[in-house]
Image (cartoon, rainbow, N blue to C red; front, side, top):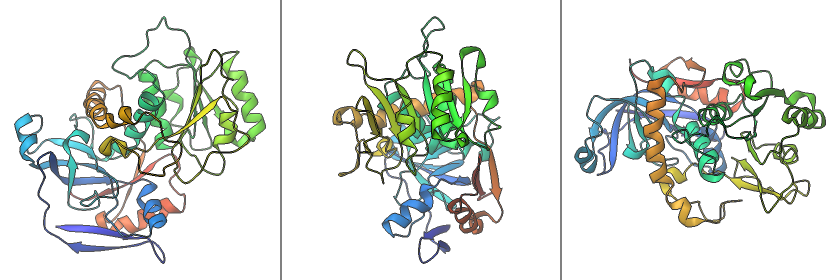
Length: 364
């Protein structure tokens, strides 16, 4: 089979080589890749660590082979249409004709969900889900808040990004409102996702930090907000977001989730009442943060159960897709299949993916 290896230096480039089709371990599934998705980490992590790898982690395709324990469970069969989240920085990733994934981060696709749409979903929906429902303890979509519940404001910075958009979608599925979505020019797809009748609104960050904070305060209409998600986490974006959260009251802490592990988040401008927590989506596979990672949760035992939670979450993602309660992200197909991975990742590195994701058709 053909596999792409991504090299980060001196400039990002790729090479395609022939390797055997991998064999699954007992709890693994081999997927014939039809469409591979891309994420910033596909080039960023390789550059930071200066290593070369098949770094793709978003997979949509067809079940090719099952591990022995997966066969016994009888949840999947060869030929199923599926999408999957491949373990980051591990062999047999998405940029290949066949990939290997643990069965607990695979979900079935309804017929109405195309492989292209499905390839935009796995990694970012997992990051958004773990952030909101595991790290911040908000109610998940299978146990949503009742319509009679009081308002529960949520601020999402970078809401037009794929990660921010899935956070908005999941929050709405859990009946978390009002959602204050902060975005810029590439936010046309956000309008239909916001429920204005419940106070959801869109704030443009381009007005500047001071005006942005004022607008958020106005849109909250006197409500205290204790939950925020910075889906960008770059160039100090977390600082003004932290200042939008209410001071701690009755020992309640305000939570700010961040997604970049390269920052310290020790800025003096962050209010003392705000707890900054880093989401490492790799816990969906490992159940643990890596040593030295910043702002990780202190409850190690709770994090250990992230893989079990992700198993349940992925089954519910499949249900939401089938019910029409969840959709993928806007996408742009990069020409050339596996040959196009180099161009796609370089365009991603150049910041050209605004409000959409680059995907690669590997098979027809």
